[in-house]
Length: 243
Image (cartoon, rainbow, N blue to C red; front, side):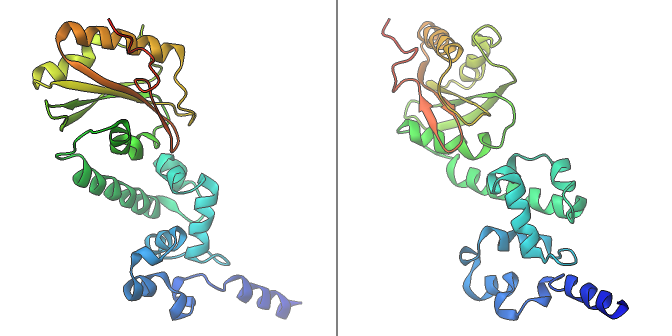
């Protein structure tokens, strides 16, 4: 019986570390040899995690995290404490995961925000989608643009339940006036993932468009961001009725 228990213990300890894998299967070695693009998401997470648990190597731990949180976007949305609480993770590994996700976000910001020109609703959606799908509460942001529709800045103004009665419309134009922006584009997210505009969204859009006409600041659009989807209220003719 004791011999059988010892055997079971040894079997459970298999693949505790990445180094226990064959060299051709180790994510770090594969990255060095063929590039990061060739690794799947669990393998990339394994490089950050470095070690797993008895009976669960780092790649398998990465797979479990992706399954638990519903993929990489779910990890992005999860709080630091939620990631820490996962068996085999802890503060150090959670910090490495969150730091890597933040670096990816900042790289995207560097590439896309500076000098970005808004040609279409999809351009604006691409600019904010990565950040907004990670938010667990409703947020309202305003993109400021110049006369050539080049992005000046993104102002993050409101968090929480949003409607025409709780959002001060004048606040949406404050930064645009200070920075002499020619136009603005309003974006907010639906944490449920469904970007269908609500009656409150339409009422808010109508109020913002009317204020923009008085201030001579064009409202280019109001986007509702969902999970991998967005809705342009202007394209649907919601709240942008002719004066």
